Image (tube, rainbow, N blue to C red; front, side, top):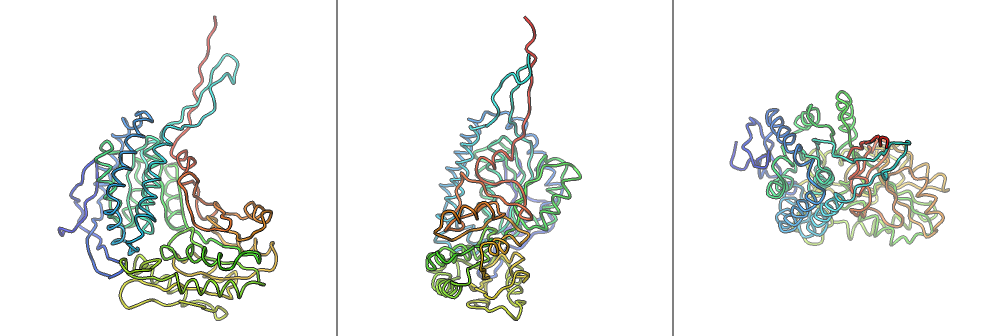
Length: 479
């Protein structure tokens, strides 16, 4: 292998992979190969799980205060290396470099600090005599070794979302980042090796087959992925054979319902950011505008103007861009294919084309006159494409919004409080925003229903997903 081949992190150290094959890492903005990542062998996965298993025997018995302090130190190290993380993330993903620290790296540091605090805030029913002559109490314990796989759209964020609650709860981890974006996760692994005991966090690299081997391995008691619906179903099937716990954060097809009392300019400002940030490669991105027919033309005009002025794409160091290249050639082909297959009744208002001949750039796109059964309405595109439909009644709006297999996020845009409350109740999505779309905080949960998966990331609910509950009962005796 070449000198540019990356190295996995196993048992607290970088290791030379014994893999015969490596994946070429391609800069999405230039289409140039800049490094190689080994396809970790089954033997390396065994080594990583052996290390995690050994580490769990001691890490799982540390006090919450010890775990908190270790995670705080890791968060401080991440903050100190923020620019290095941003450089690697931009190279892997093609994202705008100027905004990466504020948009993503700082969030990851905050999320790690949140879970460091959560380690010392364990909930449980108070001890008491629920049966005469016996005292019962609850132990909240770590699960054990966790296998995790993360995606390419937010490589560092998703790695932190996965490892932070798991490690804070006392578990140990073997993680595989996406095959196209491993660099920032490996840097996280190197910093973890300096601030956590050896084996608490292990990072292997590879392709889809590596991920399958990682998740099907007999050692982990729980497996967690952020990925596609297809991948989630495969993981759930495989985990069922060994009764592993499963944590799935999958796709989304978020609607944004716009009522006549909403300000079209504020709607356009919010939804253009929510639709095109990260090139729409976000499972919570606003993808379906469902607008009242009386304000359709005004809202579409405002969206198109805003997309053209503030929805620019370009290379990582270009000025004034909202998003960079799509992550890889297959994703560019997928997005372009959906647009090319639009039915005859659809109308492309703006965009709809690849930008330039080099790099995986695609223009911010708005498509109107869409129907509910159209592919672009029903299927996750994961790109900078926003569809528009109209409605007449609240009931119709709700039916259109809920009429997809995904149930991760949605938003409603209205000045009427009672209406907003009704829709927050009736929208069948794990997150509902009111007059905004896409902001996150570490303190609140992220996770969906239906084909968007199950389990929560972020918040105390995400922390609890990485714990198990034990009931202990003691006989009080006599005299």
